[in-house]
Length: 618
Ligand code: ADP
Image (cartoon, rainbow, N blue to C red; front, side, top):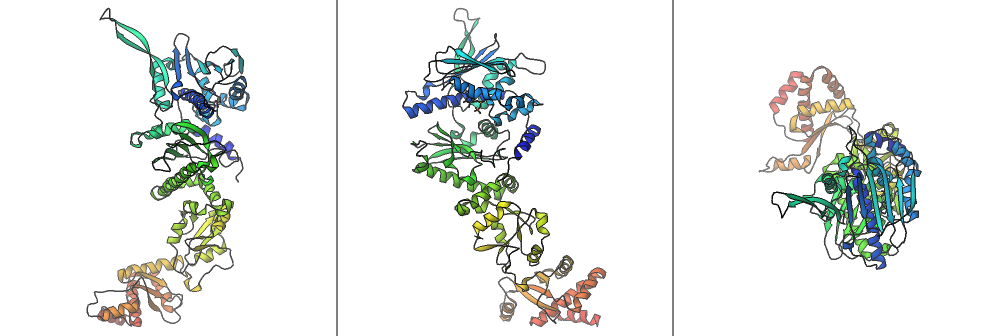
C-alpha cells in the first residue's frame, strides 16, 4: 500500500488548480442537506412503518428582503442537541474552519465539499447563520447560532414541526461582490434549476405574481403564490439524449464532492425479469486524496423506486472497481436490510450487470480513446493490479485485459493482448523485467539478451506488479517469464544479430530491390555462401518452383527474403559501398539477389542484364 503522504500534495494541487466557481454553490449545499434529512426520515418511515408518504415532504425557501434573510426549511429528520453539536460543531472545532478561513483565494472554496463542510459554505454569503431544528420524535427544539470565526452557541428553542430551518443573514453587498442577489426570487429560482432540479422532494417558494385588478382594469395587483421550482425527476430517470454534459458534470460534482469533472459518465438502464435498473456511474478524473488508504469507502448509492436505501452499497462494486461512484435505482422492490444484503440475489445480479458494464466501457475507452484510458490507468491502474492479485487471483480474468504495462519495443503502455499479438512465432514467453523505472530496466544486461531476439519486454516498476503477474501466470496460454530467470527459452538461431547500422544498410538494399523481396536480413546460419533466399508467408520457394512449372501458374510467387552472410567478404564490401558509392551498391544488390535465385534454382528474369552487370565488373 502507498502511504498517506499524497494527501498534502493533493491539498496543494487543489489549492492551486481548483477552478473558480461562484459562492452561489452554498444554496445547493444547503438544499442537498435538506434533501438528505428528508431521505433519512423517509427511510426510517419505511423501515419502521411510520405513516409518511413521499407527498408529506417538502423543502421551502423563504426570502425576507427587508431583514435580509434567506431561509431554507425542511421537514426531514431534524437534529437532537447532541447531533447539532456533533454535526455542525465539529467544523468550527476542527482544523477545517481555520483551513477555510485562511484560503488565500476565493476560488479555493470549491474544495470545501471534499472536507465535508458543505454546510459551512453558507458563511460565504452570510454574516450569521442560525439552525433551528427539532429531531423527529423529540419534544424539544434547539437553535444553533454562529457568526463564523468566533464559534457557535446552542440553546433550547421553540419549533412546532420536526425538521430544520437554516436561516442565513445575507451579507450586505460591497463594491466587488453582490450578495444581495441571493435575496432575489429570480436568482434563487435560477440556482435551484441549475444545481438542484432533480432533488426528489418539491422545493417550494412563494413567488410574487401580478394579476389584473378586477375592480380597475388598468391596475394590476401583486400577490404571492407558492410554486415548486424543481422538476424532481432524477437525472438517471431522464432520457440520455436530453441531458447535457454540463448537467452530468454538475450533478457529479455536487453529489460526490469532487471539484473536477468526471473522466467518464456511464448512464445505463437495464430492463429484464431478474435485473431492472437505471444507473449513472462515474469514473473520477483523479483518485480521491484518501483513495489508497484504509479510510476510503467504496460503494454506490442504492435506490429502489426512487427511494434512497443505502448511501454506499459496497456489495455493488468489486474492489478492483472501487473508484466508481454513482447511483443505481432498481425498479424491483428490494427487500434489503444491512444484515441480509450480502445474500440478496437480486442485488448480486445487479452488481454483476454493473460490473460487466463498467468493464466493457473501459475496454471501449482503451480502444477508442487511448489517451483518456491512460489518464484513467494512471490514477486507478494500481487498484486494478491489486484486483488481479487479491483473493489468490479469484478475479484475475475479469481484470487482466484492463492492465497496461510499458513496452520496451513499442515505447508506450500496452495490454497483454497487444503484446501477444506482436509475439514472434519463435517466441515462447511473455517477457517482463522488474526495476525502479523504465530507464533502469533498459540498462539491465538480461534485458539486452532478450532484445537481441527482437522480443518485447514489459516493464514492471511497481511493487505489486510481479505479484499480480505471478497470480496471472499466463495470458492466452503464453507463460510470463522474468528476464532474470535462468531459462529464458531463447533459440540461438533467432538471435537478432543486426546492429543499428546493419539495419540501415539492409533497408537500403531492400529499397533498391523494390518489391522483388519483402525483406533483406543478415543470416545467422550461412557459413560459406555469400547469400541465400528464404521466404515467409504461405508460399515457400519450393512451392513457387512448382507453380512456375505449371502451364497457367498465374504468377504465384513466394515472399522472398534475401539473406546475406555477415561473415563473408562481400559484406565488408557492401558496408564500404554504403558509405562511399550508393549507386554501385544498388547494382551489387541486384547481382546478389540474382545469385541467390540461381543458387535456389529459380529462373532469372533478365539474364542478359545480369550478364552485362557481371561482365562490367570482371
Ligand atoms: P455533509 O453534508 O457533507 O455531511 P455538512 O457540513 O453539509 O456536511 O453537514 C454536516 C452534517 O450536518 C450532515 O451530515 C447532517 O448530519 C447534518 N445536517 C446538515 N443539514 C441538515 C439538515 N437540514 N437536517 C438535518 N441534518 C443536517
